[in-house]
Length: 109
Image (cartoon, rainbow, N blue to C red; front, side, top):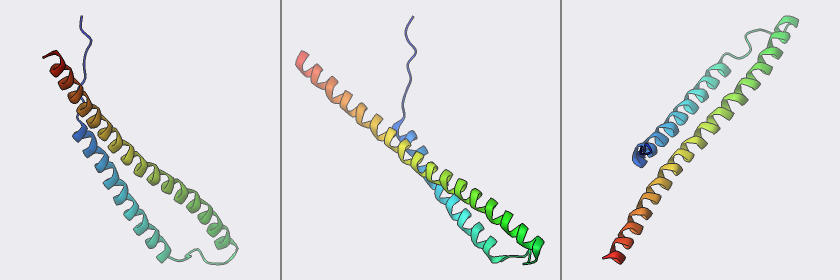
């Protein structure tokens, strides 16, 4: 019984990495637009006691959400680069294998 093989498509992998990067850039652009929209609302809760409590809660929640979103975008951008690196590594390994096989064939005649 032979071992099952697998086929690697470096161009497909590279294309996926580019797609991840493009998606990350679009999400970043959308996030920046959303932040600008939120800033445009100002502080609609007012400055009385209840408004101050709401404002404090809002700011704390917003900061946590912004940090998480920023971290996720950064990770997505890094993943895009890693996927493209994997594609480049597979392509280089395939090219190396072709060179080595040709060398062995030339030696064996």
